[in-house]
Image (tube, rainbow, N blue to C red; front, side, top):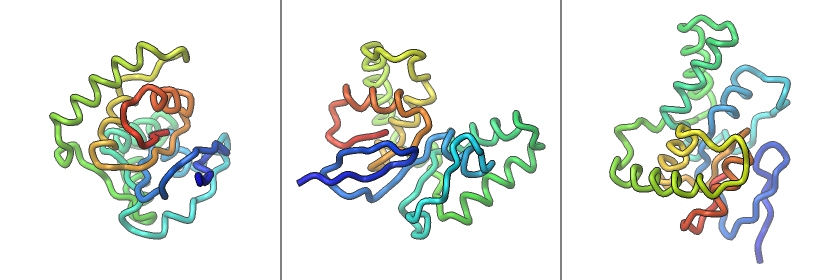
Amino acid sequence: MRDENIIGFEKFVMRNKPITKVGFDTGVLVALIDNDKEYNLTKPRFFIKKGICYAYQLAVNQVIGVLMERGYKREDAIRETINFLKENNITIIKEKEIDIGKRNALFDNLKRQRRKLKVTPKPEDSDLDIIASYKCRDIDCIMTTNYKHFIELGKYRECPTHYY
């Protein structure tokens, strides 16, 4: 029997196994750090345990950039981001911790899949990089504000687990 889990932003995902690792996309991190009223997020319960939540280095760098665009000074954006990640037990996955050959193969596969997508605008290369990098680290689920990009890519992947 399959169960339904609510995965951010009131979207339901059908899953055959429990979520053991969650990766965050840039938009979710920005919304949580900056207390973005557009998404009105509350902190999920799974933030409590270390080793469950992850943020890829690229997403962390993008968060800092977005906060700077919103008026934060560079030092403040970095401090806010790093403090939030530490306080909420979110582990940063550094680029050097990922098997580059495996990531590149997944990235190329996702680029081919992107051509089949009917959504516009299509996911950017950075979205594909985040998906491929999380997959290399066995992340079970991606929380994102780009739901359409990630759900559509999930339909074309050869991988049996769902990344949204």
